[in-house]
Length: 523
Image 1 (cartoon, rainbow, N blue to C red):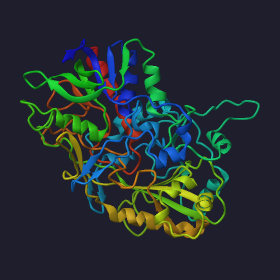
Image 2 (image 1 turned 135 degrees about the vertical axis):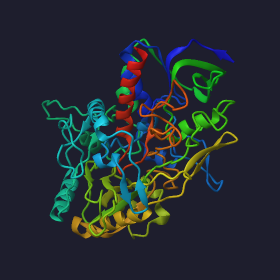
Image 3 (image 1 turned 135 degrees about the horizontal axis):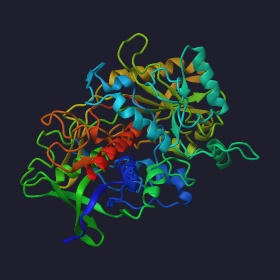
Image 4 (image 1 turned 120 degrees about the vertical axis):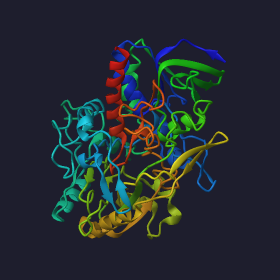
């Protein structure tokens, strides 16, 4: 097995955590190598072809995992430069201030983090500026304290969503502009400001949620962080490089190399600091595959917590049928957090509601057997209002990632589901008052057929951060308790999941760890 020179930093993975960390360290002058198992996602017509994406599964993985019963399934994950951010919906929200403390839920307690909101707040601000987050301070009733307004103004509602916002306000609710990571041209020209929605009106359908972006307007990790990082001569990206395991020195206290498999064979890539940013599931799997004489239960797993406490939210994509046509092309502009901490008649959290990208007839055709309305799919698409509902799931050590015979097993039993059903009920109660027929239709095409297991977009928690080495995997800097130079920088570090999309927190934490590593490497 060949070895190459020792790099100052080896980052495994180029998604929200890895690419943001590389960006944060790019101007340090340190030799940084990024290993990505996938290739760049091609820019081609099929990027915006719903038939190719939602029926043929283009760009996804052909890898299979197994569930707790041993049944195989295909995860909805993307091994590409930029990771899952290449197709994410770019809703970038801060966790609530209270989410960093203990929160009582229907099924138990969401544990406190070892750091408070104040530690992440300045990095949230940096991440919002970096990822072009558009929003409006003071409009989200549960929003955490902010040191300034959003760096960019909110993306305006199209007419049907604007009427939805007014209808919700008449019900006493507080809808707010959904914070979105989009690169819009904010400058005026002779035709006025160019907005993302205008592009999709011209296209005839919205190609955002679940789609790659041909325009570079979606603020994904490759576009925002990796491309500028690679402008530095000290930063290198290797694609098609699958990290099989991490080796340590004889003492077991220091990670020394990543064993990498490529089309050309297997080699050792040495690093003074090694960072796993593979995503919560694959980072845990990598550590478990790296078991050795000094780490018989898996690397950094003295606590037996590696792979445990997997969380991915209780998520639902729900379609309402508007009584009038909904010609909206960019729909993902509204959020609702009125039920985030309580649900009117109950005092426990229900969760978060946001708009989804506008569905089309091809997407709906993947769900056709479950639809009962007597109307054609294109008519349904013309009338659809699409919602995404998120309720926090709680850490459970039995919900875990395991590796058996080299294959990932994802053991998961849903919890805290009663509040999620109540959240659906809250939305259903409002349908008549927001100009919709009195029914909600569940749609899983955004995640694949198995919700929540195959839909791993919100994966967190498998290498939780904490101050007690016997009860956690990482310290407050996301360094493994058991090793001097191994870090995990992705969604793995979450002690709890909150009720909002985790992407901005992953990005902000990567910037925070970047500052720590910069200090360490220049000490």
